[in-house]
Image (tube, rainbow, N blue to C red; front, side, top):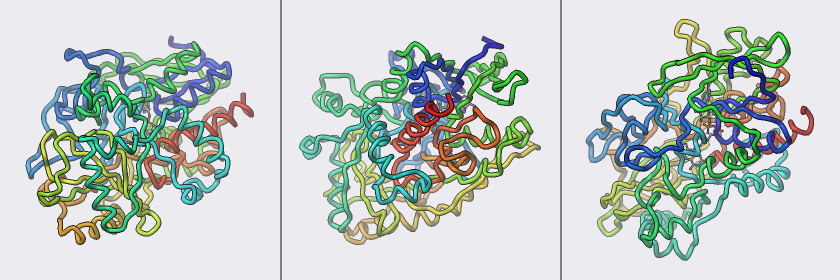
Length: 497
Ligand code: FAD
């Protein structure tokens, strides 16, 4: 209720926010989570909560009237289509030089992502988070995160025979014939459920191409793990369709948090304010960075330091497809959950996931999302004229990522006598270099905050999401975001509360 007082307020319900809420509640502290997206707990007219990837509708996009699919074209034809404006699940946020895809709703990115749950190779960790003790992370916090998220790896015997992973077996063959290490990638998908999907005994999710706009069944999103546990404590309340717009010191101590309640058209219905003893910024790398940049520039939080908004990166994401020979079909049935990758990080700075193209038809295409060691970092700055926090990422900054991905795919193409697809991202365009799924940084650990996420200048304010990580994790990021949140909240509860 307006004017209420809460001990702990969490902005956002993604990985960082869910870890904070659960651990605070278990420590006996009442938590209120504020989420700008919807609850995603009610079926639509088709009886399902989430829309299918091949049939986007109003549920699919955040406040757009036309879809903005990551793969914009097929066989040269644009595939985006008109949809009604709605507070849908996937935000394709255009930041000038880059489109940043993000999940919107209770569960954040866990609602839309592929569930690939990857712990970085230990030798790569010191470069990811230099101020964090590697032993502690690998002995305590990564295991804690993996266990709470429900991470596991595909049954290797089933992998060899499953029709839906023919595309991954072709990916393996091509990787190994060129001498690259091929690795299984763990996931939070329920692999036993997927086997039952393949056997035709349960409703299909991964085998019906569900991804990007939510999975109706087998994926263990945060709604089924951390958030379910947090709710079960009885100490956690969640307000969906509520967006935090301001945080400032309250005269009585603590912080005044200003919140817009919105409708499904994105319009503000009412504006509320509450007082919170402690506020946890968990709005995602972009959400947290934009808020903090604004609050510093407008004087609401004058004590924030000049590191706020800095150190933002795209985890080096770049996509591409290869056209296979007719004797290497990748299968018309493709599981939407990737299970494998090509690790050329040490030699070429690229880790490439063998990704699905779940179109329902044989495409003879191999498709990859590469994570690369791109060195570029962008900064958010406040634009008083437009009232927005702008990001200075440049499209040309993807070139190092393309060069690193080419260390894998130029070699495979040469070996196999194949070529790149040029029809997936626009006419004659090989590289999907206009986007990222993995925004990271903007309120970097041990720079904008202390070594545990406490924001400098304002006691009781914390950052606990992907904004803490300086731009790259060497693999898919959510396990690292979760494990770092586990580490930080343990210290905060022990020392500050
Ligand atoms: P988020 O999960 O982004 O959560 C932030 C939440 O805060 C959101 O729900 C948002 O709506 C809410 N919010 C923002 N601003 C406000 C505000 N002002 N007020 C209230 N609420 C607000 N990562 C992997 O590791 N493996 C994968 O397979 C993978 N696949 C991906 C596929 C796609 C299509 C996408 C988009 C991402 C993928 N990711 C993947 C990335 C992963 O989902 C993110 O790194 C992760 O969700 C970030 O966690 P977070 O806690 O920082 O924030």
